[in-house]
Length: 74
Image 1 (cartoon, rainbow, N blue to C red):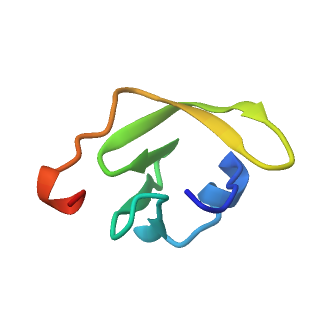
Image 2: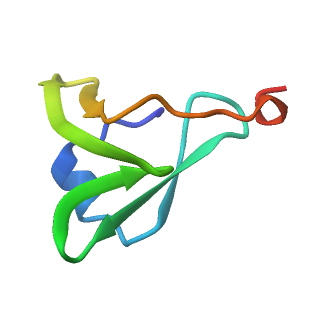
């Protein structure tokens, strides 16, 4: 994503928020559950938030890789 988001910043976004990525025309949707502290990005659970945090970027551990549609990347 072109902007740095900590776990807390993502957690305070409205449910089902769409965020731009560095891939042109490709966004991710962040959703959350009222019953769990887990955030989900395009159906992939964030399992290890804020693994690495710096002034310019954050790394979050995800439960699996994202599935990209070929036609979204062309």
